[in-house]
Structure formats: structure tokens, C-alpha cells
Image 1 (cartoon, rainbow, N blue to C red):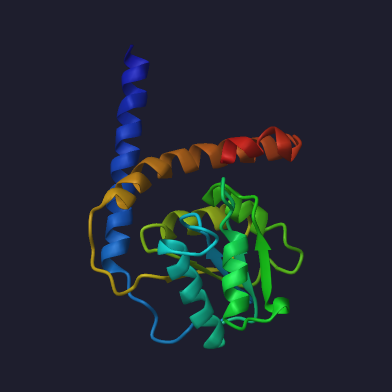
Image 2 (tube, one colour):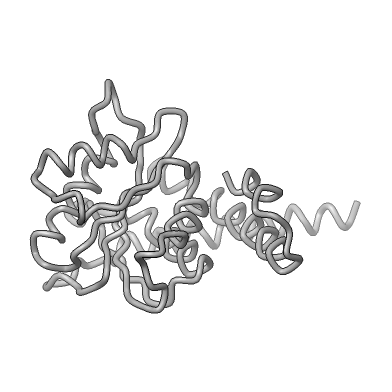
Length: 209
């Protein structure tokens, strides 16, 4: 019984720490005055497309990624996001409609979590994990996205928020991050152990969803 109390206490402490840390990041975030420079912008898919069209967070993230591309921040846009209705194909279509050339786009539509976003992005042979990348998402999501991409092996990760004008707010998205952070850490640790044991990727990939 004492052991379970310790587990519950540690879980609550981890969730509280994640909530406070993410909340402080959101409240203190400032968008850089100049666009950073990198080999690629990685736009993380958010909500699923509606009738094939982007909306909400996914639309905001892609719009911000395109603005960075136009500013010359990087020559390549990586669009990542799956789900029951994959968001990456809709992002690709919207980027092409905005005039982005095909050679400037990489995409994957299999990932169903931020950890899988990072893992599948690392699979692109066009990317050098030693070179900088720019992650594009909402502020509440960026700290966990940064940790996920660092876990996947990217050495230099810059964060760029798709919602820099919004004020600090404690809403359901921020509260969910408090739950997702401990799960992220646990799943990443388990996957790392599986990798160290040289287990096939398919044996642990589903646990990263």
C-alpha cells in the first residue's frame, strides 16, 4: 500500500511540475525579432482537417511555417501528422496551393503522437540531425515537442510559436499537457530501453501513440 501511495504522489508531483513549467513557458514566451535560420521548419499537425480543409491549430501552424519559409528561415518545410483523418496530406495541399514548390516539402502521415512525429521526422534522410531545425506549434505544445525531438536525436532545436499574440490562459490544452508530459517521459524511456535491446521498431511503436 505504501508503494502505491508513493507512485500516486510522484505522479501528482510530475503533473503539477509539468503544469507549472509549461504555464511559465507560455506566459514568458517571446517571438524572436528576426526569423531563425535552419535546415528545415517542422510543422506539427494539430486538429484533423474538416472536409479535407485545414482549420484551427493545424491551419495556424502551417500559416506560421509558410511565413518563416517566405522570410528565408529554411529552404524545406517538413509537415508531420497522422491520425484517423491524417492532417499531413491536407497541410501539403494547402502549402502547394500557397505556391510552395514540391521540392521544398517533406511529409509523413503515419504519426499519431508527438513522439511519433519526432521519430518519423528523424527517418528522413534529407535531414541531418546535427543541423538546426525549427519546430512550429502552439506555445503550450512547444516544450514537450522540443523534448520529443531531442529524444529522437536532433541536436539543435529552435522553437517558434504559431500563436505569439495570445495571452496566457489556463485552459484545457494546458491542463492536458500536465497529463501528457509524464506519459511522454515514461513512453520515451520504455522505447529507449527497447532500442537499446535492439528490438524491432514494430514491437514498441504502437506504445508511442
